[in-house]
Amino acid sequence: MNDPRTLDAVAALVAAAQRILFITGAGISADSGLPTYRGIGGLYHERLTAEGLSIEQALSGDMMRRRPDICWRYIAEIEANCRGAQPNAAHRLIAALEQEKPSVWVLTQNVDGLHRAAGSRKLIEIHGTVHHLRCTECPHERDVPDFSGLSLPPACPACGGLLRPDVVLFGELLPPQQLDRLAAVLRAGLDLVVSIGTTSVFPYIAGPVRWAQQQGIPSVEINPGDSEISAVVTHRLQMGAADALTAIWRRLHPPDPAED
Image (cartoon, rainbow, N blue to C red; front, side, top):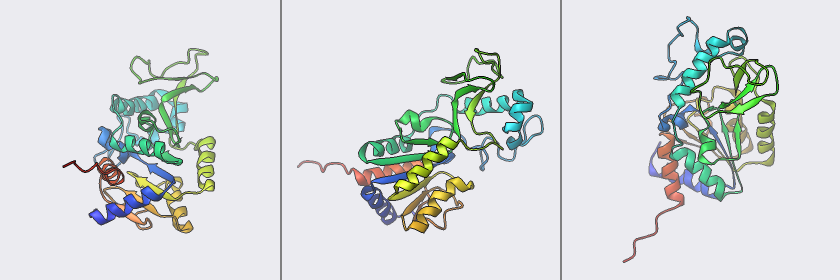
């Protein structure tokens, strides 16, 4: 499925498209050294916490309310695994395409902030970002580069209440502002939808790909494994994100022929 003809076809779609939506999951950050969380080999694959909880229980909105110390412990573990990570070629090339085309959007499930660090600005962080903290009691909020030096769970410097990362925990609703932004992107129309490194188990992640199929809009999946949308995309590239985006970019920007 990764023969040169498929790469050529995908590169041709990217070249022709002026309005692209990239949908990304943990797989795009794997080349930055970050673990996936629940996939095979992931940080929490077939593992319970020290308290005997599933990661869905430990990282839930209910746990943040009842036992913020437990919830914060595992949020901090995820952040520690992300600390020092840098955007890889896939993040950087998506950001570069945003500079070349009128409308290149990224819908990401990742909370690592690497798309923003790479330069993407048309960004829908549907699960939030681990580096933005907000108070659960007052309007105070702040950005932090990492959690080093934080007393966990951290207290709000303004009111003494509980600070929490501005992320969507299990059992919580998605942020309406981000959902509205996604709806506006779909209403404006797209020429191409590209899904990268996600199993697409959530309806709001698979939804734009299925919508594209219904609208006759081409779609591409970049993922070494199978996902919920593998059967409906126009083209599949069963390869890593950085390798795939690099191969596509080289087809869009071939080197100048050597002078005689």
